[in-house]
Length: 227
Image 1: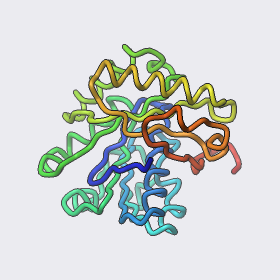
Image 2 (image 1 turned 90 degrees about the horizontal axis):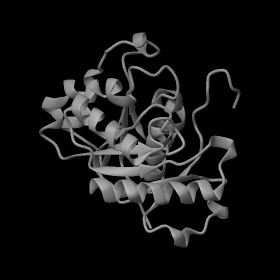
Image 3 (image 1 turned 180 degrees about the vertical axis):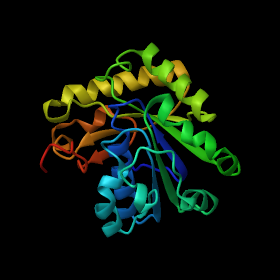
Image 4 (image 1 turned 135 degrees about the vertical axis):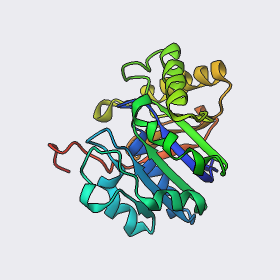
């Protein structure tokens, strides 16, 4: 089952949800599938796991990567590249905006409201049920409402990114799928896709999933960890 998501897609989620890894892999797999893809790094809060860390990998695939000005590329400052507004006005077949985590990180989206209001926008919430604050349905809904209030946009879909990094087992992925279905039932939001690492895919019974599965090849590491 292919992931059929197009247009402007904003990836949001709480810290530790894996939203940036999801955004990077969605961009990469979509480009490899033949789509024209642009991605913008709007994470101006979190100093780790930013899309910009995967810039070379993405550009080598032919993905257009939009980052803040080079002078501020490692700064935690509210600086928006003019190109971000341009890519919203002239989106590619798939244009991904990797927003910051939680309600604080997505405030930058409100600053882009005039541009986003003129386009059809999908905003998907990435959920890892093994992270603090999203281990319960109520916690996921609270995060959703906080993000919507700060961004002044509505979340339109859900993504399960259930994992414990190297300790992940197939049951963790199955649990994440069952969990995201409950969140979907409570919110009325569709499940866009779930994720699983390339190492985990051969171990999974894909018949258990009634939604697309995005294969994750880890591109981002902590700065104190070697590749």
